[in-house]
Every structure is written in C-alpha cells, then in structure tokens.
Length: 114
Image (cartoon, rainbow, N blue to C red):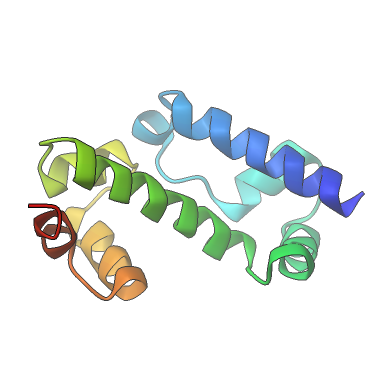
C-alpha cells in the first residue's frame, strides 16, 4: 500500500505541475496533497519518510527545484518569471529555497551552463 500511495502522490504532483495549477493556485501544500489522496497530512509524511527519507514538504520542494533547474538551463525566462511560473508569490522565496537546496543562487546555476 505504501508504494501505491507514493505512486499516487507522484501522479498527482505530475498532473498539478503539468497543468496551470501552479500558476493558478500556487505551490501545492501537504494538506492539499493529503486531501486529494484521502489520508491525513501526518500519515502521508510518515509514509513518504519511510519510503524516501523525505517529508512530503521536502518532496514537493525537491520536485520544484528539479523543475527550476530545467527552466534555468533550457529557457531564457528571468528568475522572477520562473519563480512565478513555479507558483511562488515572491521571487525572493524562490531564490532562498533554491540557494538553500543547491548552495548556489538561481543565476549562478544558470551561469554554470554558459
């Protein structure tokens, strides 16, 4: 059942990220994901931690970082445009998360491809 829950979460996140949901509703919350999957937020995070070693919040953030890395390396969108496209209300929040996870700023990451 735990693998099924992880698969369902991945499918749900894929759909959320590939649709306009990020722009319309912002970054998905743990509560939203849990509600969509029919489980409690704590149960979802506990099961995900057992399967992946990450909480649901960390998992969502890692998916956002992966999308950001792709956009930074394959588009000419500004960092602010990417932040808004990923559902961040403030580009500074995106910058802070990216730098915390990657140890470089979004611009430094992009510059590494030039």
